[in-house]
Image (cartoon, rainbow, N blue to C red):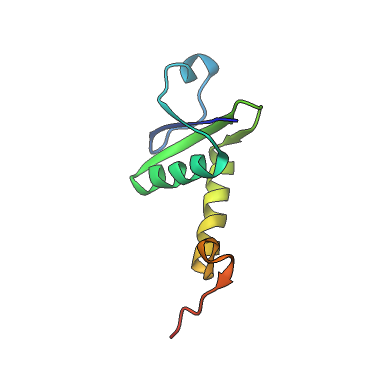
Length: 92
């Protein structure tokens, strides 16, 4: 399954299907990579306003923001998926 991440300048909201066909997107082989790209987009001052999977999955701007906040909270809490979910001690 592939996922398209549609992005634009900060403040971009949902667009009509006609306008969406003219918007930029980047395609990814899985949802995790699509969300990582959305995080990168956010870090550069732009916004990912839609993620669509070819299987019907759809995340709007609010759902993307919520998922990115959840991921950031996990990282801030010291849970590293790279270490198999090992909780790290932030205070040495």
